[in-house]
Image 1 (tube, each protein chain N blue to C red):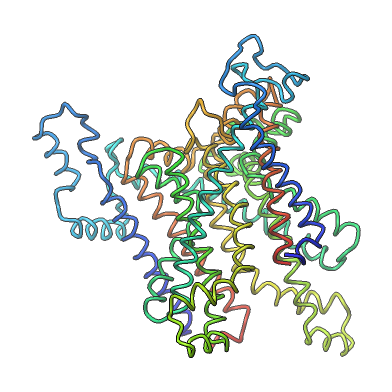
Image 2 (image 1 turned 120 degrees about the horizontal axis):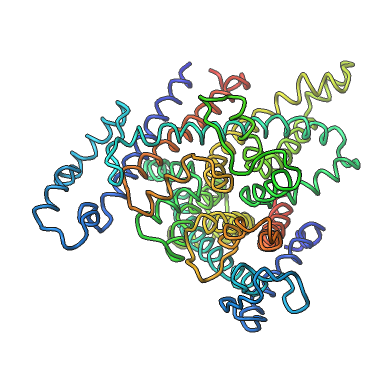
Length: 264
Length: 312
């Protein structure tokens, strides 16, 4: 962690991410306007001190909607990474630790899921279980399990024959204790890196899906959905598309900078 | 040779597993497609008749095997919504998406390799630092947003192309590529950034190895060493990476098609998801699975071709 904080790009990424999260959380309590309030006299209003990102085709304040969309994005990304990480740790530690036929079979299924783009898995889930935030989190979470599982598995394979595991076993520690109390803490640095990259990918996946109209349903705001609405009005009001897009880029950029330095 | 056969075998096993998992997922979910099609006021006989015509009254395994054997013959079943063969509905759309993805892949490869080589040669120089900063930003741009920006700048601002315009490949190949170029570029942008970085770091890693020093000490010039040895060895890990990017770009294409209103898999996938037209969704899923598995196998074969050590 100390080594990470020394890296310039990690600090830059951390600053961007922390600011984004703080603004999003603050937006929950102090949104300048109601994100769903329409004032048709302000239709396509430009950037002004009152509306720092202007207004959309219904005269809703874009900044308030962006804040609301960020919240959705962060919520979905957190849920996705949580499911992916917990599932990945379970799958990866068991397969890596025990090996054998169990490992071969589970990793084969793992590779199959890994081969599919996460967005596509989420689309299939949407057709199976209907459209909505919960479906999207579940689908993306499952799609993210394999990448975590791979990382954790290779750490377990590397560790399981090391001396400290052997001595723990000689002291009478059971398999569960060895997995969770001895090996898992050593896999933390690798896991942290996967978590950051996972967040990065989850934000992008959420944006893509909500652009397609999967996930959060209107009138609730989401960044991707705003972009798809804005596209029809791009001649009249380019700012409507520009601001939500820039916010997505900033979020991904912050996480990307952190992720990059964590494996350099 | 043996490893090549093994790759093909594992390719078929993977496809088998995918098809089974996908089919099972669609079979176990609650909700009867026949009942959904006919709404609630249908007579039980009518529902039963429709179930029979969909083949839903047979046991699960029978249905699975008849579906798989159909797939092998190129028969993907019948769409619930359009009552037409699925293969007819998606064939042309699949080709559009694949062309788009392939074009994006070509753009990515053609740009990323020279740029990465340049950056590796001038590591730490001004251009390298500028490119790596630009890269970090481009990597964060979702392809559909890149598409919107490109539409705005090149379509509306500079008027180089007509946003939303499209001609089928069969009618006018040149026009098709002209309309596909900007969407493909949008799909490629984040991938170019990612691959420049990866390729640069593998080239840098490779050029620190002993054999490179040996080559220099034999008196070979810097460029000869780079182009004859280093790049080829650096390509070995990159080939696997490129294959993964290709599969990822299929998803990118499906989303970006919506920006440019290209009649590819995206639209049909979205409408059949909304209408719960499972045969179509399953078919699209299998097509992507086949593309993914082929990309993976080709990259494995590429690695075998490039790396004599694993050729035994």
